[in-house]
Length: 361
Image 1 (cartoon, rainbow, N blue to C red):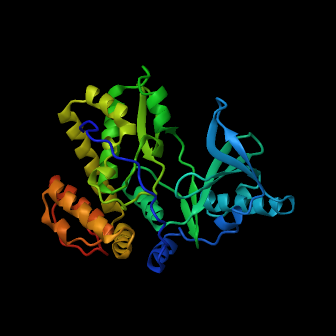
Image 2 (spheres, rainbow, N blue to C red; image 1 turned 120 degrees about the horizontal axis):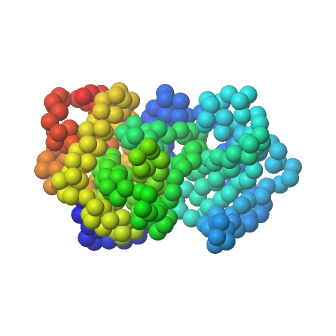
Image 3 (cartoon, one colour; image 1 turned 90 degrees about the vertical axis):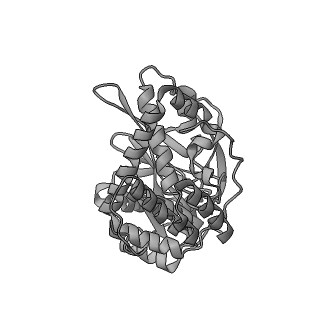
């Protein structure tokens, strides 16, 4: 990993892309597409918004929204049923003791999400989930995260609505500010995870992983604490034409983290961790080869990025991996597949021809 040599400017707003019939068929096959009692459009019909502050009393990007008294009961009951679909496949009997405590709205960003806080009436434990405008890019990003990362994700689509579970962790910007130099954390473990996260983002072409778009999960262990970095924003999946946009190391928001990693990690060790993550990604891809093949097949047919961006990116990836096969790619789905093929060749896996629909190892 090198330092953030040239910071990447702020992203322009990406247009949302509709979920195609083919992709919706894939989502239905794997129980991602479900009937929902509450849609995103219905949540937009709130009557009042009250600004929310954080624990320090500082303004946040969120407002707590209030609905008409005559519809709140039915609305909140529908939101509880969505939570049951997300968590326990719709078995409402095990979540009857939960209640919706609050609905928040954020007008910042492309997805303008609603955040629903669900509370356990017996012990006051709380959880969250989100309703957003459905966007094919985001749905592809969530599914690729589920298949190729060490993290499993639950989400549901229905028409123009996308439901996502909450991804718990310390926001990356807060981690860098308050935790990065904590003596209880092993610098090498933090640096190792950043290398792995950098590689995962690049291979599956997840862009815009600035510090506020990922979380850091710290897990106490018998010898120190383990660290994992998880993406929490999938809006910029395979849209940008710049190669460095898919490498978290090049964002100025991550510069302090990158310099920290360079200080504590030898370049050969960083290469080792990069290769470890490549190997793990291929193992995950092999375990889900049929499902991943179908996903990339739909993604290859889906125009989720302008063709000029595809051509710009394919030229950079062809140079990066020294493989002219990229120059035949006409979609972002094909580029993700070629990235997986590139790392497979790099670590010496046997190569066998496969169609986009098969993706067999």
